[in-house]
Image (cartoon, rainbow over all chains, first blue to last red; front, side):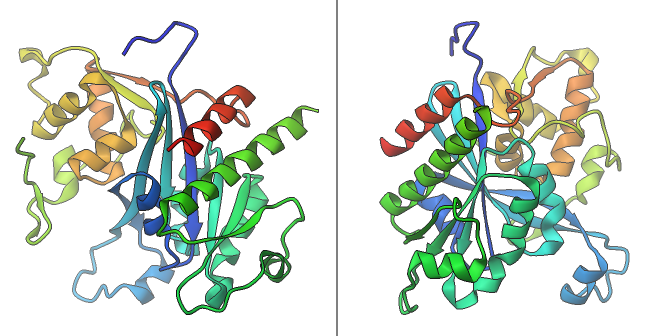
Length: 191
Length: 122
């Protein structure tokens, strides 16, 4: 574990967002060694209606599992993937996760496209580089990426691609597309 | 390697989580970034009798350096609890915590190109 003094270890964060059941866990698992990471949510009024809290009136927090994966590019350069629940009630986690994040993959399911609206709004507002990856589920009608772009009202420079998150090769393309997009935004900002 | 069985998938929690932290929910570890690198600096001595088994486990994990997220995942405790435990260890000088290289707003072009090539090579 010897690093040249000028070569500080670098850790990068990539977020994987999207609605419930869209394939976030599968994507993280396809490309990295995945492990659960628990965090806590302070139950909001919104949560109380969803989570049955009868009989546990004193309970104010609940644990939430995030997907957490690690890809070692080389010694001293590690990419961490965090798959986060997409619902607005989990935004307290996103604020922490998106701080210093390299970028985000928004996973979309064309059968429930509205599920990824909150994620897209969030990253657009924060200026976090993001791409939209449409997970092609078996049996789901396939759509052209351009149709998805129009439906989501995305800026023309936001990459949209189709993927199958169960396949490692496809998951790789998704991540490479994101990092390339982040690089493009970086070089554009430097001009 | 036997891990402390404070929590069991089937049985649920044996100990209420913040009992591990003496009921504290805040500490000097609150601001440790998820991917900050934690490295154990020395073996605990008799003077460090305040640290518990979970913290000893954290020191083992961080022996060669591990991120906050790695540690939380490994010990199977929620981040909030782990941050309190890390704060104690930091106050005692048992760990060194290094923030991720400040990526403001993004890491260097060279690093990103390296990541792209590294991902392609997976």
